[in-house]
Image (cartoon, rainbow, N blue to C red; front, side, top):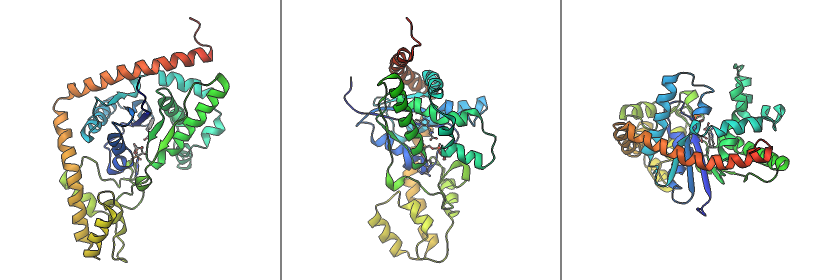
Length: 317
Ligand code: ADP
Ligand code: TRP
């Protein structure tokens, strides 16, 4: 068995990924692939809380898989799978649901936000953190690279592991969130957190026109020499020193600075977009990756689940 620590993370198939997803989380998956034993999955069961169309779910799921491969995840180094291929996570979610109190889950940010917006909240949204705890704990993750907005979910996974261990005996490792401070919350074109739900994103696989349109729409206040929102996004792409020199040389020239950002974004995005297009040509080969990864994950997860069933008293033979 590998002596490397276990890294695990997932992305929901809910639409096109954006630059915030990339810098906040996905880029770390690629950079750390040799250093850990890696499990990266498509969180289709989580997406069911909002995606309720077969076509959309199928298309988005293949989409995330293509995204993973296009940014450079290598199936030789990373077990790439889809969550629904390891249904044990749903089984463990039920067990966790019986250990966790309602007031505890009511403190979760995502639930409180949905409640504050007077949304109709399905039980899946309420239970979402426990499914995520099962995702993290079953394969025995040590570290979970995510953006700042997922920190509380990883804490809930830790609490849930501790509770289970207390009640049924030592079973689960306690995971840690891995959050890069510099990119914890990538701002969108309006300065708020970049998010699909705010319509302020720069798509990760954007076409040249989309990049230009998104950057030109970045909100700037005319009061200062440096357009803060442009600078904030640009700082993802260049060292501080280099960037400061660039902004000093083009003081107050918002249009020029936006053009420079467009150029740098194109340098980042174009090769990834082209790789994604090439992968799309042979979807069946890409799906084989998911199938094979599912088998590997399934084996590991089923072993742990057998231990859980035994500890809980569900395994008589
Ligand atoms: P969204 O908020 O756009 O729906 P997701 O919830 O699908 O994004 O997030 C996928 C991953 O990307 C998570 O690890 C999340 O923490 C990270 N992430 C999302 N938006 C940002 C952002 N603006 N800055 C940094 N990380 C982000
Ligand atoms: N909740 C995460 C998000 O919205 C996706 C996710 C599901 C996840 N299960 C996970 C992330 C386990 C890390 C580990 O982005």
